[in-house]
Each structure stands twice: as structure tokens, then as C-alpha cells.
Picture 1: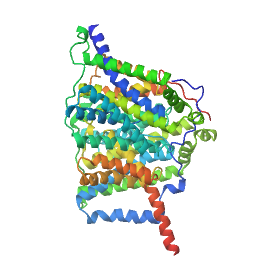
Picture 2: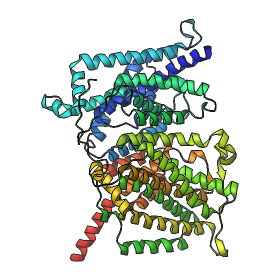
Picture 3: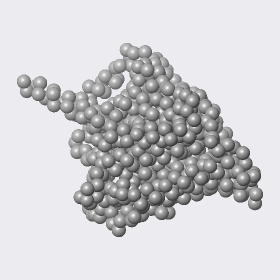
Picture 4: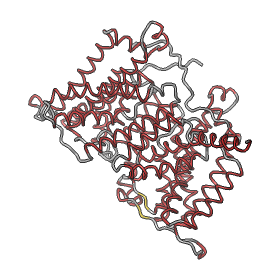
Length: 292
Length: 339
């Protein structure tokens, strides 16, 4: 039983990361109806920026805030320069664009900071949490930050004018334009927020997986799995999906013989396909009805 | 987020329609290119011959993706998985069961066809971006599946398998590389002609009708589910044959040769060559083999960035890839003749 509780708690801790990634994926999906395959790389790049700031002597929380601001601006710039012109292009062209972005970001990060593994500090420390042996303070911190972010997003979308405008632009762009919402900038804003949320995910996971240009590969696949499980149209679903995927991954690794570490990615694959086949809208998503 | 009762989805089609006749080259041009392909190996170094062989192999794989995407309008970022399956089928048959290398190719094709058909079944319910996602996950998961412990006695696990490179048969006085070049050329040619005919046939028209408008296609009596899975199967089979060929030519298979990067490269090859233009597949293959080398010579370490920037240039400047270039060239030639 202790093993079980242990694994569930550890699963919730890693799930927090997947939840952040899934949240970023959902933000962009909401804005432009595309999955950003470069999301993980963008998050990795943000994490490197914060690392660099700390190397230059900026205190942790200042570098955290600065990185979020830089990532936010970076996301908007990428949207304006590269993806706005592609808005009307076929899906295929957009996927190619994301892949190109993936290659560029990965290689530039490798060039600037090279491919050696770097230590990344945690602000929460790694002592046992509240005297419990089960999870560390860093893991508890990850869960806390994720939940905090979810609450913040909820308040933003439900109770602010601009949040309402963003929802309108995502749900019915034509009507939103008619009532004076600048839908084009709402999309850019969505990119900026997704990029900043990705940065949080990267900064949180860096102490666990260590910092290097390829650190996000597996995490992104799990982020996708979480987003799909929760429903691509629901931020709450993304977070719940993230925690579920984290727990599921850990339990499968512990209790199904032969799974272990080497089958972790195939599990994500199986999960994505199962959800897409049996419940394409996910747990919390709304089903898309097509008019023909 | 609030739920709208009904979403009116007026999407742009996933892939722009390609007129059927624009999918191939004229007879004259084809013959000239074939003659050039036949003669070149005599004059160049063995390494160049090897690279040209690889271009043809990747060309076959890109062609397979082109049938799937350009033909039936479905996506795949998971072609590397079928490529790996074909490569491993060939390698395992040759090393563990002493099957002749040429005979392993049809088996590789069959195995991949089966896998593609089975994967296509659930994938049926997915379209556009969801399909890209499912196949993306497949490609990411494949290397780990190949490293599985209980398969290790056949697959060699992380180490991979080394394969014997075949000699030219009947005591022909040419080297291994040149022999494999001609061997690959014959297979590539057969697959190319077969694919052109496939797309011109009843099945090909069914694929294209699904690509252009699924509802109209089913109204005309096309069995949409059947043809969609069939397209997946055929595409996987051809990719598997390409994978098998690569195992023979490279004489080595290992799980980490078939990562998501390979799938991405094949996808890029298709975009660069022009979606739906079969000859473009080979142009795209040349792009994905030679451009990384050029990029590396421009700046080591930045090769990925150069690659990505080039891709963006293609997307923005020539969205139809090599097909667009070919059409422009043709028109210029036509103008010259008139003058």
C-alpha cells in the first residue's frame, strides 16, 4: 500500500509538468486550431534564458519574472512574423512551419549553450515535504505552481474584459470581429501566454530532468497525451489530464510487468490513440459539430 | 470556456487539390532523366553512387507519403515507424533466417502493409491535426519498441544488427555499391510506375475524391473507410520496402536510426518536392539528403537552424515546392520556343 501511495504522489508531481505543457498546448489550440509541435522547444529555450540570467547574477525570482516576460514577447513575435501569414494556409503548411520552428529553436539553443547537461536550481529545496518521506518540497512546489496558474487563468478568462474577448475570438471569430474584438491580436496574445506557460513548465521540470536542448522531447508527447485526454478545448481538462497521465504513467511502470522505463513513450502513444478513438473530445472538451 | 451549441467549421481543405494530369512528368522528360540515371554511376565515385542510392530510397519513402497525403489527403508524421519496420524485417530475415536479400523486400512490404492497415483502422476516425498527432506519437514511440528486451535475440536491442552487403550476382564485374544502385533503381522505377498507375486507376480516383470532399465522395458510392485504410496500408507497404532497401544498402539497422527526425525529414521531403507531385518526391529526397550537409558546411552546429530557415523560405516563397518551380520552368521554355 505504501508503494501505491508513493507512486500516486510521485505521479501527481510529474503530472504537474505535463499539466503545464498541456495547458500551453491548449492555449495555442484554442487560438489557432493547431497543435504546436515546437511548444516543447520553446519552453526549453525559455528555461535556458532564465538559466543564463541566473548565471549573470540575477536572483531566482527576478529571472523567473524576466523570463516569463521575455517568453511572452517572444511568443507574440513568432506569431506576428511567422504564423500570421500562414493563417489561411492548409493544415499541412502549418505543420511544416511548426516543424521548421522546432528545428531552428533546438539547433540555436545547442549552438549558444551546447549540449552538455546543466544543473538547474530549485527555489523550493529538495527536503521532504512537511516531514513526509513521500514527496519532496520541490515536487509539492510544482503542484502548487500549476494549480496557482490554473486559478489565475480561470480568473483571467472569466472575469476580465480581455479574457472574455479572447474567448469570443476563439469561439466565434466572425461575430467577435463584428462586436469590435481585434481577433488577430487575440491570437497573438494566445501565443504569448502559451509561450509564458511553457516557460513555467520548463523552469519547473529543469531541476528534475536537468537542462539540455533535448530535455523536452518526451515531456511534449506526454503534454499532448494530457491535452488530448482532458480535451483540447478545455484548460481545466488539460490540467486534470496532466495529473491523470502522470499517475497512470507511474502506476503502469510499477505494476504492469515488462513496462518499466523502456516503454514509457509507447504508453503515451497508446493513451493518445485510445482517447482519440473512443472519446475524441476528451474528458472535458466540447464535441465539435460540423455543419455540412 | 463556454461551449457554443454548434460550431460552424469552415476549414480550408487539408491539402490543396492537385489535378490528376499534373501529377507526373511528360514521357520525353522521363526518358532523359532515366538515361541520365543509368549512365551517371559509370563516371562518379563510389561514395556519390551510395548517396544517389540513398536519394532513391528516401525518394521511394517520400513517394509513399505523397500517395497518402497528396492522394488521399491524410497526414502522417509517423512514416519512420513503417520505414523501421521494413528495415528490421529485411535485416532480421537476412541475418537470422538466411533469406536472400531480394526476397526480403516483398516480405518487408507485406509486414508494413499489415501494420499500416491495422494502424489505419483506428486512425480512420481521426483527421487533420489529430492524425498528425497520433502518427507523431507512433514515430516517437517506435525506437523504444525496437529496443524491447524480449525481442533482443532477433533485433540485437540497442546495438542493432549488422547485415552482409550483397555482391553483384552472376559474377558481374561491378562493385557492390554500383550493383546496389542499379538494384535500387529498378525497384524505384517499378514503384514509381506502379504508383502513377495506382493514382490513375479507380482506386486512385477514389483516394482523390476523398481528399477533395469526403461527403461528396461517399455520396458517389466511394467506401470512404475502406479506401482511407487502404491508402494507409499501401503507403506503409511502400515505405516498408524503402526501409528494407535501406537496411540492405547501409548494411546496418539500429533503433536510433529511426527516430522522429527521420519522419520529419520525410515529411519535409514531401513539402519541398510539392505535395501530390510524384516526381517531386525524388527532388525532396535529394533536398533532405544534401541540404543538411550544405547547411553543416555553412555553419557547423547551426545545421538544424539553416534547415528550418530553408523550410520557412520554401513555405513562404514556393508553397507548392518543386512542382511550382517545374511549372514555371516549363512556361519559360514554352515562351522561348514561341520567340
